[in-house]
Length: 347
Image (tube, rainbow, N blue to C red; front, side, top):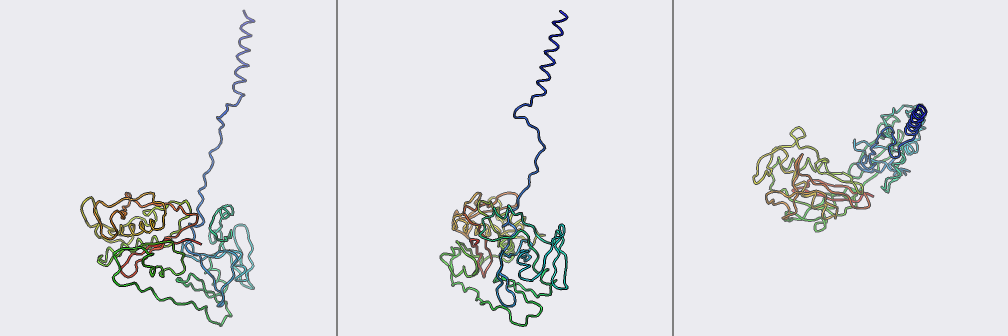
């Protein structure tokens, strides 16, 4: 009996040792991985630009652009090419030297684009890994710098240059036909496309604000300015509310008529629905995918029936997805007595 009990104890010990020594399949424990959110490269590009040096266009190896902080930036490679500066990397700092002049850019003073992400972007743009603030670098090296916003061009003058700046053709603002309808497409009124002479317009739409009161027009203008220049990548979702932001008095919005239920009442940001409705029709004309859209509870008169899109902060939104194979840009402005939107292909 004693030998039997000893045998049982031995069997149990062996069983427990095997059980705890054998890993359980499918229950591997590991440290949680840090999720790194990649910011699309196009989300930092407000507009690509050309660079002119001493009256001539400068041949750049990489794209120069205006970023979302509205600063002109140039690649590290082109900075060396254009300004003739020697650049040395010291830890996380960049030392720029030209002749007897030298200065340092700290890590937060320049932009480092992840190489893998650059390769993944389908922009038809040649991008560098490092970008420097163009105005700061130019002025440190004694260059004069100016920006022609209409032509999207940076004009640089070296310290010894005595010649003239490049001459751009000054385009007259488009003359809109008299007695235009209250709404319509840019295809039927192609003169409106001249508002954006350097853009590749796909389609667009306009609506009239001829009888709209000044506070309402102010709200429309503010919301148009927020949307203008927005770039949406292929497959990316764009939200009107998130792009424009909350309509508040602090943001400059004024009281004007808004539809609440079946009544027209006064509210901060009244009129912004004409902005969203004009954009909505531009999206339809461009055959972009509408993800979310809500009609008004009352008939409105600035777009055709069933072609409106109401928005409210924290509520109804207008969302669309770029179903094209290329990035698109939203163009918006108030011109004369019209709200005009266009969708452009980003080259």
